[in-house]
Image (cartoon, rainbow, N blue to C red):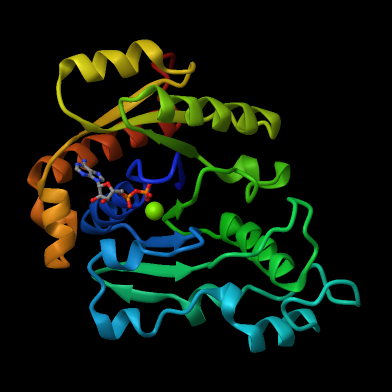
Length: 265
Ligand SMILES: Nc1ncnc2c1ncn2[C@@H]1O[C@H](COP(=O)(O)OP(=O)(O)O)[C@@H](O)[C@H]1O
Ligand SMILES: [Mg+2]
């Protein structure tokens, strides 16, 4: 199962990514979480202790590795470098595990226009494609708003793109843009997740104002989320209402993405 999580900044992508990773890990699944946000913070949300976090380095900042694999120094434009460097050993070598969740940080690429051709972007693109081809039990991609990482060729491997929204028109506007981008590359398995929802009226608002993305689940607004952040512990451990909501989302995802059982024979 490959789950990509997208949405406007601050809506709760990282919170959801961490919750789902821990729900699946707790269920005994083999989880690889990938932080593809330019300012990574999934490790903190997962409660990685400081000494584990110190072992994590974004792939995009590994200049020596990028030079070794692509044949060019990061930041060089023009010149020659390979567009499909070797990346198959990277998830094992550079991910760090804590409580049955393995985490890999991609880091950011300074994208000067979406068609940027530089060694580090060649590296990240190849790595991204490689991750989608892997046979991990559960792959969770914490992305930012765009879907530019997901090229047409990789779309078939994403089982679900979760678009996180708050009950506001602004975040629904971003969801609508994501839907258009996703449709452009042929990605149709999109579901909406409402976060920071305070009451039934807000759930109804999301259900009626969705830009045509089916609403899969709701995470309640809970002050415990900020408290968990201040205490440096995962929301999964500290906020039962959110853990329960994430468990429901995982169940809903499993039933939506697993092949339908036919009654016909
Ligand atoms: N259900 C929730 N209730 C209350 N606060 C939340 C909830 N979900 C997220 N937050 C808060 O919203 C902020 C952004 O969350 P985060 O998961 O980092 O968003 P993103 O990854 O989309 O930028 C954080 O300060 C977080 O504590
Ligand atoms: Mg985030």
